[in-house]
Image 1 (cartoon, each protein chain N blue to C red):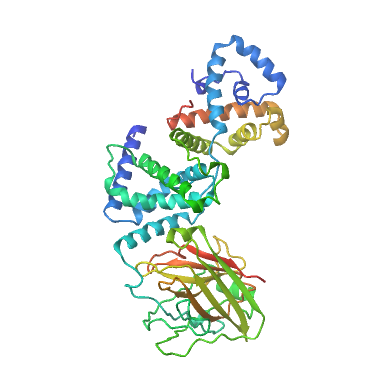
Image 2 (spheres, helix red, strand yellow; image 1 turned 90 degrees about the horizontal axis):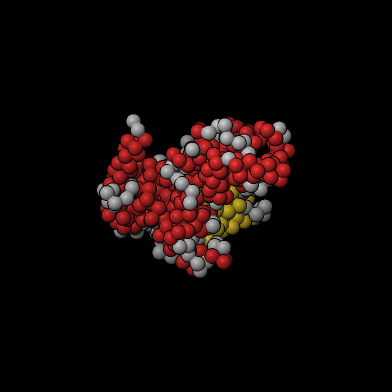
Length: 298
Length: 190
């Protein structure tokens, strides 16, 4: 008879099968078991279950962003199969905008996407193909952040910086101490075949702003209109209360490397975590999968 | 609607999702199948590979392979769940063989990919986990203390501050509930 139909069974039957009875109870139950056919049948079923119980899979949960990373991986594979590469697609090399009424500090971001061979500050510009596009992702009250950070408001104004052919090189400036953020590849990076990617951002205070030089290596051109985006996350950022500020977008050439110079109000001692994500226009996601991540060394 | 009818309807839905993927829709159908199988596949990966990061990679690879092979899926031969786990097993074995996985894998298992019966055991362990997840917290708690920490009922009573009789009753009802949950999943311990 199945155990769930025999509520009158001995209360120690389950404990015995689990090996959880105290010695005295176990001895007493074994005496009873010897003469009770019903308990023998029940215990046999429970024992099998108890053995299987010990090998139950661990109660591990997949990370919340695995769904979006998985979806991105499939879409990436589809684009790759279609042969749509970044080289063929329009590239969002530079961008601009940001709602002025939400920006307490005006800073500028100069972005030069270049092959790695170009040293910092002598960045070879990307083709002057421009797109008006911007990110401004945070789902927390703007004013509470402003209060928290005071004058060092976490705002980035991304200003169109058109480095056309022959334009003047971006100059790295700043007089204060530098803050370094080493970047290493995430698990998701393997999805995009950039598991060996690395990077480093060096920030130096320049007046009220910070000048960042971001160098990335080991990336690869993304299919379709895919591009990389640089983010800082705030000190209390969490999945329920995201505090992300975009620094800019970039693409890489065949070398997989790029050097970017950005000027922003984001203080690396406050917004310590930096990440590089993979984005697809119109994906609808708040942030794309993260391929590089790091924390400032302060 | 009977359980069998419900299962048939679900199987037909999932077969349709795979057909949509085969037709080129890699948005909603992939998301829906991930929501149905993602957690189980992830746990399967953790069991097979012993590493969360590799398990995540396996899940992503599994869905990429699903897209690639969706056109060959035949609902007459296997349901989508079986199809996905066959893919997952293959993805996991490939990950184990990959040289760059070695630093993440337990050393003693690097060169010994699991045999087929091991995979079956992994699937059984997943069903057991799902059955455990359906129990109340109180039931799960006493079972975990007994099978995971090898505590006796009196030790469990002491740990939880409960009368011994309450623990005995709780263990008994927990085992009955677990049996019912396993029966619902067609699981019969060997």
